Image 1: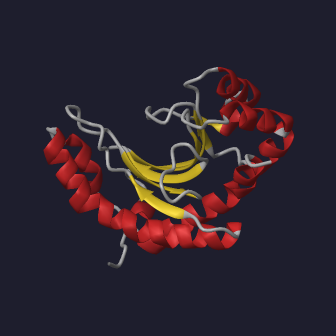
Image 2: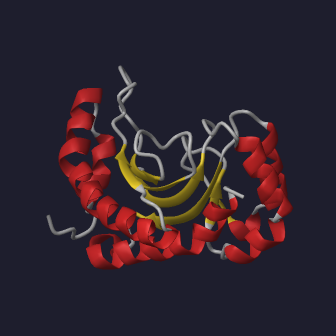
Image 3: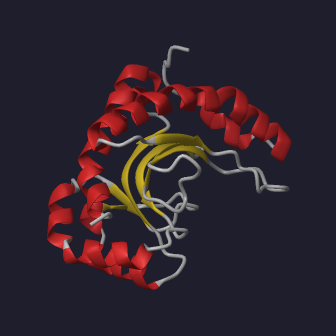
Length: 205
């Protein structure tokens, strides 16, 4: 499959009523594209990190009633799963595409990672560009620009609150023409991940 980007039809998937109907559209429209770009990006990350990175595509298997409001691929150093590990993510809500380095609440050593981040706060502030965004909950659409957020406060919350999360990356609006240029979009994601790799490595210190 030649990846040509994401269309309005892909984003409209999240307006489809019914769990099965929406899941069928996710499987048909979005997941084949995730497979292509995810493989390219996981190969790329494997080379840059010097260890094998594995592609995971969200199955939404636990859902029994409510259809998913978003869907994603994740790339992690573990073959069996990604939620308990720092991971790279690309996914869609109905109005934007997100590109994240994600540390979510399932991480078993979340507080230790948060402490490391707090000890290296200045370095993180230098790594992450001002126009990047930060989310404290992967289930919600909203995020804050790096320049508008108190990073130390966010990381203290990530350390101390059991369900708190820390995701950093970029959003692309549904109307941005880059979404319909497959090669350009993959390069954009590649550059975003490359920028965030030092933070990923910091998490393992």
